[in-house]
Length: 260
Length: 265
Ligand SMILES: Nc1ncnc2c1ncn2[C@@H]1O[C@H](COP(=O)(O)OP(=O)(O)OP(=O)(O)O)[C@@H](O)[C@H]1O
Ligand SMILES: [Mg+2]
Image (cartoon, rainbow over the protein chains, first blue to last red):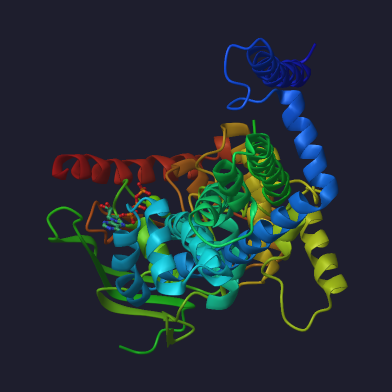
């Protein structure tokens, strides 16, 4: 067996292990609940939750709430990625922009992103705009910081080579700075993606109607716990699917990077 | 002083850097005069830290001089541009581009994409890398990377080639091979070359003239013609009495400055 095969074999084993753990946890859950160790109201059986989930799916309620959540998430997230990358690179390359935007970003950076939610609600109300802004703010900070750092540490010989081959500033930014900074920017975006989901669900729980976070909170209030669990599992599944999708895109874009 | 006809004219060049911790001005180059004729191959020798790279960077337009004049074709040196090609010791290939795209990077102008591609392919063949067009730099050996770097620089057809220890990181055999290839390319299309090296042997094999710099702040210590016929024959040069004499002389000059640099540091 050669090294590559061995590595692939190990990875396969790890994946099977990971899936086994998930199944074991679900089985334990089922057992605990069915065995009467806890109040079945508080922890409904997995099979009951699955049935509730299926019902929710067929009724169109779940797809509608998920769509409403993902719409806000997609809008806030994509705007934040574009603005964040442009702003981060501009700050790294132009002193004036750094001096202008730097202090504000440094100030906002250490604030827990969830603490921004009430403030945004205060200023922008409880509608879609406010929630999109919350997602935007949660996403943009890690993106700006990674783009700023990455664009500021592009190897000088790359910049000089491009210049000596005739690149002007715009070509240099697009063909060298952005490309060289991309691996680090992608990890910033991944962080932003995770935060965007967290703050979105948080904002939906706090205020307004609609969205998967609202569904969790609302059913908690009305006592339909099986739906609460179904909605929470849906959130987990969305997060997992997003991360996988992101990794696939990232691997395509960064195929030139040394990967183990 | 009458206007010199040289391709590159450097007069009284000085460069100071601000020390990162104290902020005090540290002289890297101190009053350097140098002429390089068109189509001349000049090698630059000198102890580490004497300002060889800095001189190349000033000529390339990447770094500005503190004092003195630098003329290229009689005009003050401008910002970096395709008239001057630069090759770095660490290759500087774009890792996100294939060999072909790296070589195509600097080819521009009115040429159609097909023409640009054909040109790049011809250059890749010239440095013996046919079949590696689609490879990424991380899959190439050091010697192959440096070949791509040479092809990439030749692609924009510079008048002047600035090379900063391009073969310094290569093993001896690869290095000899690369020297032969560079000479072959240069003998077919003579560009003005300023080539920094640490190796006395390399300087004697390649250069028309060898310029030795003093320890920092760098000035010209010696300027020695290499009276060896071209095309140069490698194996003959090992035993050639003129070459042997020259190597000994250059080594003595460099050593003096290495010792001085050590004393100062
Ligand atoms: N950006 C910089 N800031 C401060 N000092 C610098 C800078 N670049 C170079 N120096 C200093 O200037 C001097 C000359 O540096 P340079 O790199 O030109 O030397 P070199 O002759 O190329 O050395 P080597 O043979 O080791 O490559 C050194 O003392 C170096 O520390
Ligand atoms: Mg150097």
